[in-house]
Image 1: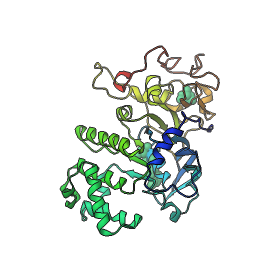
Image 2: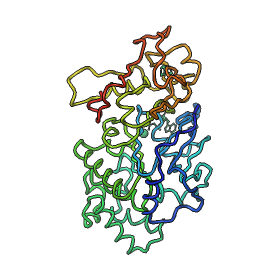
Image 3: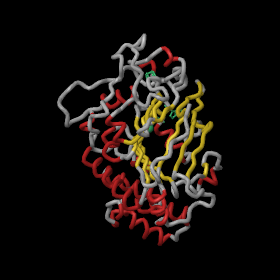
Length: 388
Ligand SMILES: Nc1ncnc2c1ncn2[C@@H]1O[C@H](COP(=O)(O)OP(=O)(O)O)[C@@H](O)[C@H]1O
Ligand code: SF4
Ligand SMILES: [Mg+2]
């Protein structure tokens, strides 16, 4: 169940600035004043012989001009499927069942494969986790970057090679290293090359799906710094999918917490990390290791995410939630938007309570009677390290 998305702050000045620097004209049917990206009630399912996997089941969010949105949640919660749905790079057994994916106000969901070519890589592109798997091992890196420029932007071979060299320099790879094959580059370099490929057609939105997960910590930091620099220099908007909440705390403006194919909580990084209200967000944050904090036992979230062929009724988190009430296993919690802009779906926060949980001890609660809510008077921490 979803509610209409609330408008964020006035986007007009930022939109005008970013659109004014675009290299290519906007798509013909772009709606003046429309948000950059608005996903509404998206449902993407997979068909398996054993049943239908409800991987994304009513997800809504919005990405503004120049914004970085982090998407987090345990493995199998539908983060990748959400991202791949945006430009329909889905496996053949997947289907977008319903919902809208509006880019500049144009709904991409009903577009044909051919129509989508105008948007894939040119408006939205993706950097995947495993650069080694995504790069062609028998083609020089430079040629892999040049090829889409020839195919999608009709550049001559010479122009495309020159541009590929520029893109490599942009991501911190010396031009001449472009002659290398992927296996001749380090993991960090390969990921940089992937970012160069994603940037090739000058997209408005880059999606990073766990772009630093396979890298060691130092290289991870370099790649994140690169993404931040590019975002700033190229006026990019970012969707960063990661299970690493510290990456989101460092890099993103807003965060979307997904659980079992649905949105649990969404809001500014500052609000959500300082005052996580959804029991799942609270668990996720307290289960996260923090090298700067005093040594203490990390919380674990009991159980594991459900099989999305047969998700639990009502709130999908109820079998693992310490605050579950009888209503939780029967009724899907509606999404509520609080005064601070945080949106969440949990029966502890019915409409009108504005973020104050219902305090009546639930009859069958097995945990504390009220969820851990940081007092609004506590100063919001700047960084995750201080939040957990
Ligand atoms: N090709 C597929 N066929 C069937 N089920 C799939 C397929 N790909 C992913 N899934 C299922 O969809 C759900 C969401 O997966 P995914 O989007 O990859 O989650 P995440 O990125 O959060 O780890 C999981 O239950 C996963 O098992
Ligand atoms: S209190 Fe109920 S609705 Fe809220 S997360 Fe727990 S089970 Fe879900
Ligand atoms: Mg994934």
